[in-house]
Amino acid sequence: MSQAAQRRPIGRLLSPALLPATAARLRHRMGPGIDAVTAATQRLSPVWAAAASRAGIISRPGWVGLAVMTAAIALGLVLGWRELWAAAWVLAVLFLAAIGFVLGKARYDVAIDLASRRVVVGEQAVGRLLVRNAGTRPIAPAQVELPVGRGLATFQLPRLAAGEELEELFTVPTQRRAVLQLGPVRSVKSDPLQLLRRAAGLNEPTELYVHPRIVQLANSSTGLLRDLDGLARQNISNDDIAFHALRQYAPGDDRRHIHWKSSARAQNLMVRQFEETRRSQVAILLASRPTEYAESDEFELAVSIAGSVGVHALADGKAITLLGPHRAMARHTKGQLLDGLSGVELNERARPLQDQAGTVSAHAPGASVVVLVAGSRVGPEQLTRASSRLPLAAHRVAVTVDPSSGLRRRTSGDLTLLTVPTLEDLGTALRKGI
Picture 1 (cartoon, one colour):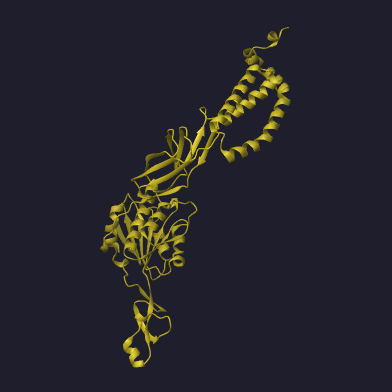
Picture 2 (cartoon, helix red, strand yellow):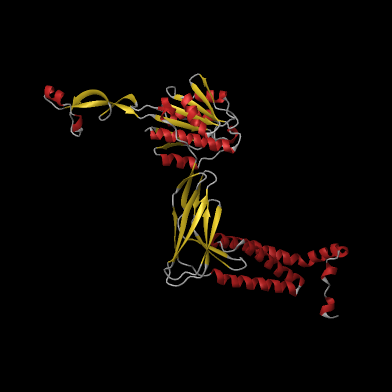
């Protein structure tokens, strides 16, 4: 019988009536081959994984192609089908051809220039990508990728002569508060079928801060927040405001503090001593558990309220301590405060507000004002319990965010409770409540 006659048609081989018998024969004939292929795959898998993790060359379509090629080789060996061998050879040739597309390294000088590294949520961040051919030879057209947070911007570069520079403008929409990492810019080489893909980082990443929206508060909005001269302490200082006593001059003392009339009477140089004063300090405690807010928009409003109060206190020359989901953050400038608030997120592991209130005394023991900011799911009882754990000498204000409610004010002992539906109502609430 001829070789052609010995072959079974594929349709007959896969006929429903013959499937059980065919499957049994295939298992019997392919058993050793499958075992050999499985063992070889297990031995080669760590090598392939290491190569892929180091170079990142094999793309997802490439891994699919490798799997198909391996299966075609195994089945071709077992079944003796020339068509499978042909498919395996075609894939092998395609992989060999793809290697030529990813070889070599283009020399680029890349820079990201942002108009501003700090924008307010809702604004567009504008920047430009500068790419220069740093080599001595022309570079063929290529693709450059710019990661923006979790997104990705792709730029197609034309052919660049030696020393030639290209400028690409881009905008980053900022729909929500965040700290976005731009870069590193990657040059990408790939074959037409995307079997192999080689990416190389070209620069260091840049951070873009998307600040929360805040409102300006009038001076009258924070009547009891003001403590311009600070509070006197028992510590003695050589340079302060509150006069304490005179003492004899010692080498190193500031000559501006010499009291000349007393020095003349005592026939010896006498200098002033002062009582040390402390700067007025405002502590802002932001509730950070998801269960304390009805929706994510409430948390965004709470962050904006915390930022507005903090910025106004800094403008009055006060020190700020912000207690969020992770740790207490001392902020000395407006930029530092808003940068810190840009990255604040709800955290399942954060402690409840009343538990966090116990840490205020540890992080801001000298706080003259403590502002609690919470969502609508934090009731007055919880706020009162949290207030009982705050420093006794501090003025206490609790701001509850509730867009579905109206502007309200009430008191509970030493605690002032404010309900604020919108950010624009914050100034009115503070004028009435503080």
